[in-house]
Image (cartoon, rainbow, N blue to C red; front, side, top):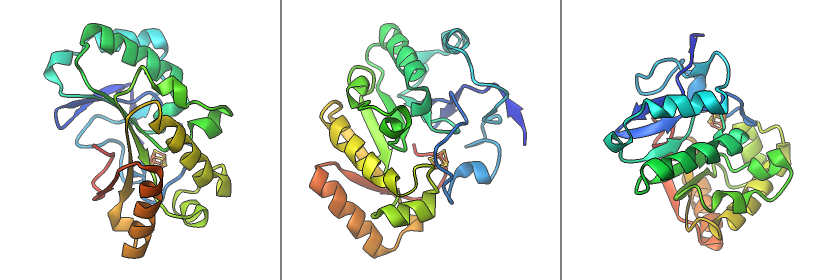
Length: 208
Ligand code: SF4
């Protein structure tokens, strides 16, 4: 396994942010099982997590005008470092107020922090993209192996319902390659009930 300190990296004209390799899932389809990076990036395994000062210093070296969007995605679950995501988002808002900011999350920040985290997303992210992954708690556990077991999907759905009221552009995604047509239809049904759009994506790596 190759490691480095790649915190910011480019994917298709967007600036991606990698703050942690920690994750509360172990998904069967996780890109981290296939290599050390994504889209030809340098290794995204971190020698250690950047401190706030280090991340802000690295951000200073990036020319934000060159990118269409800032995306917290990482090589791990970004919401585990939600406070640092907010610090970076705030700084990007100051430096380039028109830059869209998205977080790609597994939706488990409530479960991780043990509180309703949705209101904390309001001022920092233009888009919250939540990986729905599966239509039932059992199928979610089979596919994603969450540390919260069968509590994972209900917790994600509660977070999604709440964050939608804080960030209008909240979306669900599923990886179509890993689901049957019936499961995709069931995911769509869940999304429709919550009034959240569902995007069925092809597996090519971290969501973009
Ligand atoms: S939630 Fe994302 S980073 Fe975590 S194991 Fe699943 S695909 Fe990998």
